[in-house]
Image (cartoon, rainbow, N blue to C red):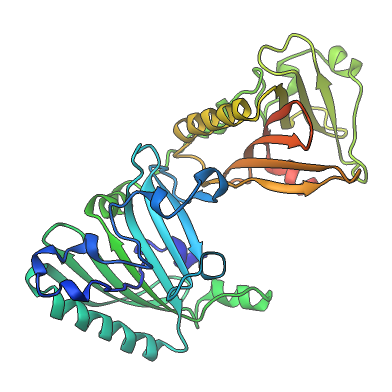
Length: 374
């Protein structure tokens, strides 16, 4: 959603330390709370297991990761959503930005609520305020209007309260026409450290032109390249062709011999393509223990986060999922994704069937052409 990706994502604040107002020297941004969450706390205090939680990297530079809590699943008392940003490579994983949002009935009611929050801040933090930006109004190209107030504290942390009006936003209107749920008016409040704000303004949107995905190889093969660059036409024709049920537009060949890292490799091609452009690569191997598979997946994810961080539009780590296959057998899996603006994708998976002695590890790279013909 655009309001999630807006450059100044804003949220609502709960000043629950009223009992300490007599000692204002302790009342700084760290002691402000959004749903009992404060800046510079460890993310582990609010998320039991990151491996079981959706972790999103939604900016080209992947320094900060985001975990979102919603009202339904996390029993939020005030906010409908709360986002927490933290440095992914910070071993302590301290929270550097907290964002809470509430859907409002109208823009004027949002502005009224914003003023009440501001008054509380001004009254109780008057000696901690270094600078104030009042009623900063913006209108983006899509028609979304916002009105924001920013309060900069003397410890360099920031409080920002913002009202969004999506009633004339073209992207919101498209969402409504398709039946999607999208707010018309939103109140958002943000607690943010200066280093997170600096990153958001200076580095978060940086990109490089070169497509690093073309350099990512699985057993020396790369997508969007011709298979003829790796083997002769006669050798290609000697492979057995595998097709998916109900899909006669592409086929795969499987390679088992002379692989350095994986047990098998599947390469997907478009039927009747004389250039033999590789549109998909999937490699698989097996581990005796789930933990080893998870370690392999995490190591590859962190490597790709560095190797492809400026080129990937978004990276996503999904929690463990449990399902049942067509044979009524239960299995569990977890998958990480790298998604690109041009439609290409990388995914990494650990999968384990109930009662199985091995865990399947898979890594796949797929071009947008593969998604279009599925």
